[in-house]
Length: 185
Image (tube, rainbow, N blue to C red; front, side, top):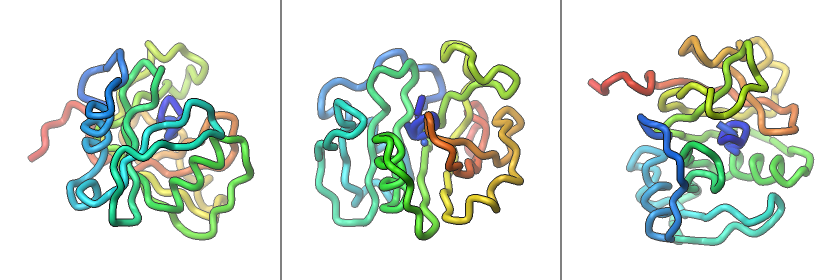
């Protein structure tokens, strides 16, 4: 998932300039994860750290009191892409990245306020250093995968599009909030 290849891990499922190094200390990871969503989500969210293996345990950096979980950018990726996920979306990511079958029984929602770096549609196998920065967005996964197939896969147009986790076929909708370089009004 570059994050949306994560996270889209979260593969795509993130700053206004490319980051070349992931947060290293727990304090840096916590601060990075808190940038991923709106304050009304992040203030009570559990903050986890990524596992060292796809099917490993996620380490708690801060215990929260809501159903939301935020993670810093994925270690080792060329760009920083933190995300915040509800229970459904997080379970879907964990299962997908661990190679387990997805069990989506209702809509799942995620935030990536820092954005994500994604390949151009015409060059899906291009190197991550050629990706473009998609701006802040919300993501939705659904048990009704057939309904999502009508969306484009072209992230470059700024319109909602679908993406998937690495090596997975289940898709999620990415809904851009604004372009990465567009100033908030």
